[in-house]
Image (cartoon, rainbow, N blue to C red; front, side, top):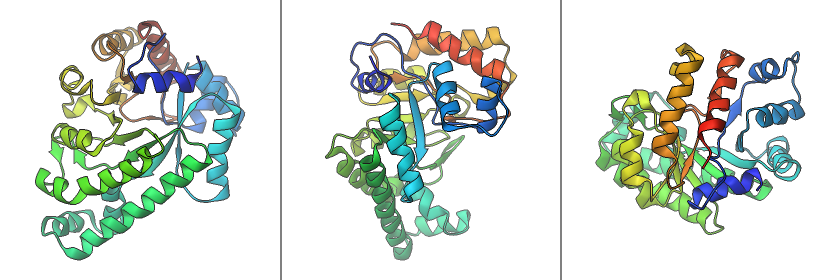
Length: 293
């Protein structure tokens, strides 16, 4: 079974040898530390580091330059990793155009100019996603950080009226070619989960435990509708001992892996160079041990 096949099987809740696992991005400094090599690292070094950790996937920022599109082609053709395209969603893209508080206020008043801006940004994001898929991406992660630790940044009715139609349109277009689409947002997105199902997303990433995202409840309520990815806390990884990491991974796997539909990852999706390599190795070795079916 190839790595990409393993991820596909998780998305479809088919029988598996083990839980797929991986992060979108590994910092170059962490790759160098894992391999005991001096910087700068090469593409081959990153591939080697991901194999060392037993990862099955990679995430690449979507873009339209030859270099960006070439990266998708290389990962698709020269490895068997499942390749995600990381695409900013309409909320995130539009919010970057102005002061964040001002943006939220203008969304709250349903200002026509802001609504038009979100539609424009949605179209640009979809265009980037389609280019990435054409270049070799297996799937798309729509990153739209629309929440904080205590909940959504706005009234759920505004999300339903303004952003849900945009997500539905993006997902529908990508699913025409059977491209799996994940939604990512940090924070507490409990109120958002029914909308993600309605929009047609294949899965959801982050599920931040520090923001109250209870993986046991989410698995029970949405495990048959969404593939779950993430939920391992990065802050915990930094402060925990190796035995504590082992136990936390065991507990997460016991709750999230039964019946399939789970991909092991930190809730961040990115491992930085500040992380001790011993902690990262302990995390992924534990995931290998406790992720077997």
